Amino acid sequence: METLGLVDEIESTISGAAGRQKVTLVILSMGKGVSVAKEEIVKRLAEKYPGASIDIQDGGKAGSVTVKEIEVE
Figure 1 (cartoon, rainbow, N blue to C red):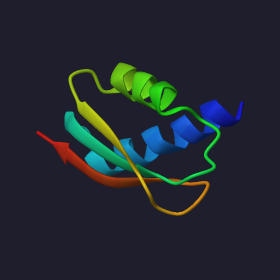
Figure 2 (cartoon, one colour):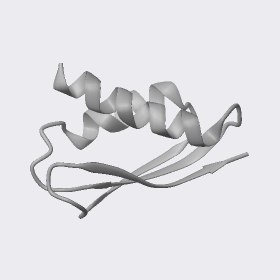
Figure 3 (cartoon, rainbow, N blue to C red):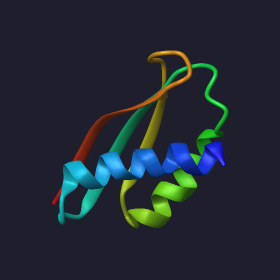
Figure 4 (cartoon, rainbow, N blue to C red):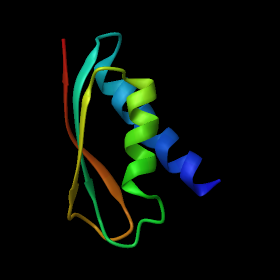
């Protein structure tokens, strides 16, 4: 359940920032201790935002995932 909650929170943040525009790029920062695999996050975001480039960088606050940047068109 934690996986779904975290990814839902990320999707909500991205959707709120993008509005109705098409998301083309998402860059996340993932701290150590996050119990969700990067692959799972990328898979879910790719389904939600088809065609968007998704990059997850190591670093940031331990136990957290931060949306660093999004691009829209």
